[in-house]
Length: 189
Image (cartoon, rainbow, N blue to C red; front, side, top):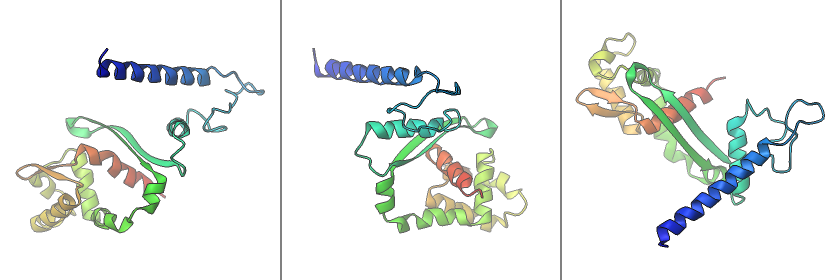
């Protein structure tokens, strides 16, 4: 048996063990009130509604399997169908909380500052909504002159929030759609 086959067998065995563990968690009976599964010692989020906090429970379960991540993690995940037939974006990325807290945040100032202008935020929303060309964007009220429009688009390109997809055409890269929507959702009060 070659190394590739052996490696695949090990991966399948590991997946089978994880599936068995998940099935064992799901088969826990109702608690004394009959309201739902009784928490077990393996339950990473006791007391949290599994329907509401399913993503959090999954993240906590994953962290329990990796005890070296001592301070937790932050995860961005999304499945987005873009308007205008631009396709679906399915994306996730996880970050160790300890590394995020310890990292140099000032390096992110330019990227975040690009979102700090009302015209640029509106440009991003319009591009996600399916308006990709400068001609389409220039017809919208409140975005300023053509020169101002190009200035704001350059700022967004420089920060990586949009990229040129052709001459005078822009798109939000797939790897930026979910983070952008997470920033917007996270700014809700």
